Length: 83
Image (cartoon, rainbow, N blue to C red):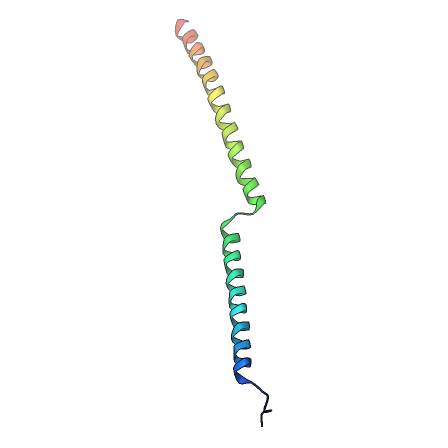
């Protein structure tokens, strides 16, 4: 038999409060995990930025030397045509 001072209402209230606190905590953990999944890690961001930098340097080098090579090929072609 139950003890006469045993209060089911307060026990149920305490249980519901604890359940709500756990549900909020689980929801917060889920949202944090979702945010971390969207935001790349520092190492990934660094690699992306490094790749972008290397590509821009390569494109600049191509533009620079392509114009110089074009002038060289033109002068060689003109010399060959004159001979």
